[in-house]
Image (tube, rainbow, N blue to C red; front, side, top):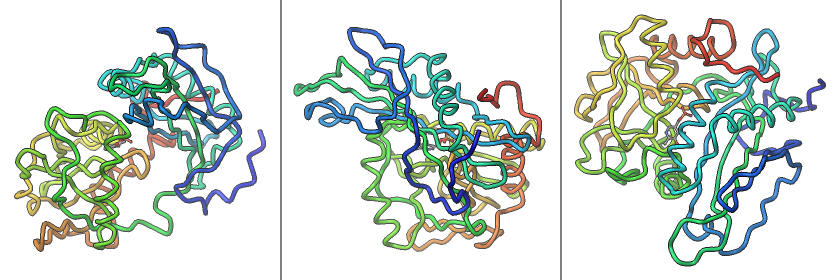
Length: 341
Ligand SMILES: *Cc1c(COP(=O)(O)O)cnc(C)c1O
């Protein structure tokens, strides 16, 4: 298969139209078969539930080329399960796990020419999403839905080398206790836009949100989980019901424990113990881990020892082991790597 003529290394994280998307529709209580489409525009009634009441959720994963030339995705079953949780919480119909994985395979295969070659650092970003499509004006769930998957090639995250981030502890909240922080709903992002633009204007790369009830414990950023390395070389990550369960973070905890033999704990982490950590990183599909060099808490600066030019040693080991597993250099746990044939 001939690859598209794309300068992979200079791609950013942006949208580029590819040959096909996947689309399935839900009506009269059931999903249709679903199909590939070359129509990348969605036309809906002006009163569609997604427009009026933001009834929509999404997922994010990647396909990439391994060293031995296979096209693979990483743990798509967990994306399917998380989307099931999101759909249930938003009173949307579940798109069945087996069909979700089939659809991912189908749309990646159809766009194989857009899957960046091994070594380019670029990947094919896969964005499954679902929305309420029929007109509703009273506040209630839609009765008709569309499930789609778009794919778009994206560039290497650390272009020109790693740059540790400067983040602030946020005064605004992301997710209420017993709210929707644990699901991947569009609404969680709409309300974060004000705060991320403000953070950038103030010279910060990201906001770290605190628990909304007490503002004393660490939650996560707007789009990534947080992971810390303790001074004795263990790994810990915040435990909270209002955090989005990152697949990258859950995988890194397994890597820490089973591959690197580190102590790995999920526990409540107070903002007062930030000084006691040696390293900090943000985990998500896009970057795997972005190192944090500095956290600013209203004038109190927590500077991690690795500084502002490189990843800390444990973060680096975690990063290299997980990306090694993803790229086929290191043997993966059963079921983590799903080949597209
Ligand atoms: C998607 C997302 C993450 C990262 O999850 P991954 O499965 O690792 O990509 C973390 N936090 C939030 C709020 C997210 O929406």
